[in-house]
Amino acid sequence: MRYDISIAYGAETPPWPGDTPYSCRWAWDMAQGASVNVGHVTTSLHLGTHADAPLHVIPNGAPSDSLPLHVFSGRARVLDVQRATEGSHISVDQLSALLSDGGVPARLLLRTGVSVATGVFPDRWPTLTEGAAAWLAAQGLRLLGVDAPSVDERDARELLVHHALFGAGAYVIENLRLGDVPDGEYHLSAYPLLVTGADAAPLRAVLESVPE
Ligand SMILES: [Zn+2]
Image (tube, rainbow, N blue to C red; front, side, top):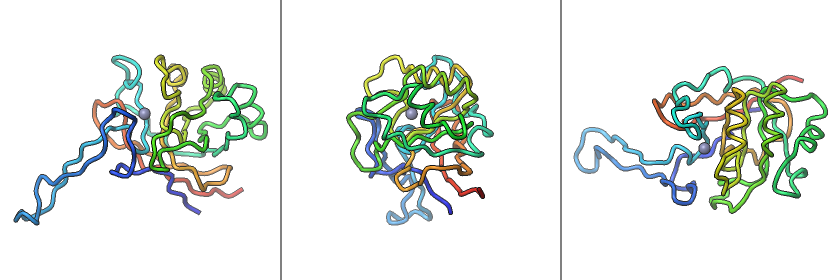
């Protein structure tokens, strides 16, 4: 079984309020007599499914073209955290209880149930505490994926979860489409597009079932 867990770079995906929406125009247009159609896209790099680069939150941090490929492919676990989010944060205790069978995986994809896949940018979404993010990384996590628009809160200013992960050598995927994917173990393929010098890179995220 294969699941495309990507959200489109397209006009149907709402940008972060104030950020750049997607538009595609023709640099050359056959309807205007050109010999080919050639597109010209304007978009925030954070619109659809993407990896943040450390440069997103760290001045002079590593840019999008240095995202390490091995992190973005391999065994990954999908985990629903909706039952742990009565508050807006997921603590170490809540997370360790949810991960009690199997321990901390190298790649963890969290379903908060809040996503731009609905076509509306959400007001709020659950996030890990800074401590929970640091705990995951200390236990060997290398990639945290979320269905929400950010691993931090919408009005976060210090972006503590981003910093806790990047500071420990872990990476981030945001805006996953996890709606119909059952919890469990998969093989993730989500290589970031080779965009030079940017703060984020779009990617196509795909999960495939693995034998038990
Ligand atoms: Zn982002």
